Amino acid sequence: METEAMMMVTKKRTLTFDTSQFTTDKIDYNLASAFYVNLTSTSSEPEIIFVAVEHPEEWQILCQKVLYDSTPLQFSLQPGMSIEQRQTVECEARRFGGVLEGNIIVQVYTEDATISQSFSILMVFEQEPVHDGMSTQQIAMFGGGGLLSVLSLLFILRRRRVYEEVEEEVAQIQQSGPPIQEVQPTQPPLHPQVSTQQDEATVEHDNSFVPAEQVALGGPPLPEGGLPAGWTMEQWQYYGQQYLDGTL
Image (cartoon, rainbow, N blue to C red):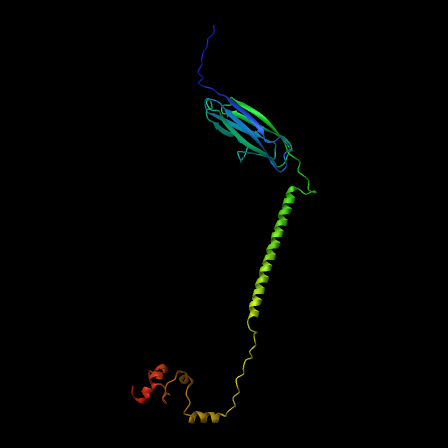
């Protein structure tokens, strides 16, 4: 006799963890090597999973493009009983010093710590080449200083070229006009000296003398007493003749 029975599973918890490495060859001393942590859940309930990483000193780990600071990473997976749930954690290791060969320890565990697993990933970096007794930092500093010197020299040469072009333009402008002739100051003609008595006689008997101000402004000659009371030279220029004629 055979008996068949059917059971309805209402609760299930199944998690699978594994790691993979981008390459197992030696890693260039100036490059980083990637590794992956794969999380798979077919549980009937949501799962919260933590990932912790240990690495040799002077090595650096980036996970999900964020620097790992020894704090475990937390991930949440939705129920996977009907549809399998996957999460891939991408990390990379870079060596800044210390040992060339070391193991990266990856620990994966659930929130209640009932399911956990540990993985070891071996990485080997190449030896940094020797540059005739100079370290990489010294070479970088020397290269930066040389570049700064070159840029300074180019800046000085450019400024000198600009100054030369400006001086050349100024010289062309100065030479484009007619030649400058020096003008010698002219000496006023020497007047013959006349005796004081002759000057006085000329002043007394020469009635044709007209003040310079009157010559400049025009108008009739001033009367012997000068301008009438309250008059200005401008008024005399326009109305002086009417005043003399008595028509004003």
